[in-house]
Image (cartoon, rainbow, N blue to C red; front, top):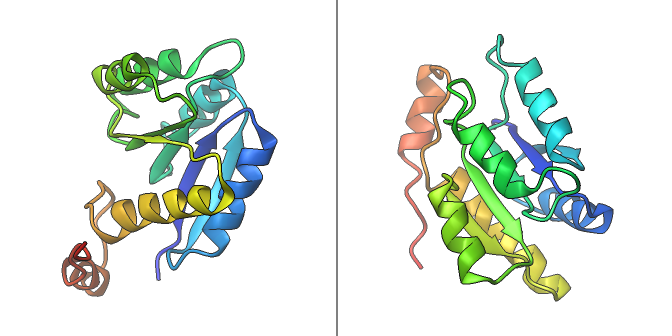
Length: 158
């Protein structure tokens, strides 16, 4: 089973701990890298631009210190080496303006963080089930066996 690399950009340590816990309960093997601000995220991602190691998925909050999530999203989606990485905006904001703006800037998905614990875990599970169980992500050429396993794993019926 492939271990999926997730970059979480969120300045709230409690939310990061909950995401880590939810990942531990998931059927999808994941490794989480947590960074608390946009500048650290850009430095982290660009340090790997000359290699083939990028996260499979970025989850990010909009309300970050210094440089906000909107600016981070715009910067990542305008970078040729980073733009293909799917980005899930995972924010407490329910503002239609924030949602629309996130999609305009290139977000692949917008999920509002539930305030109740079970809802939070369910949201993370749904994000992982979609991105790792249903969606096809860009990646290096996989060995034949793993390609076959992926192609025979259709989206679950809802």
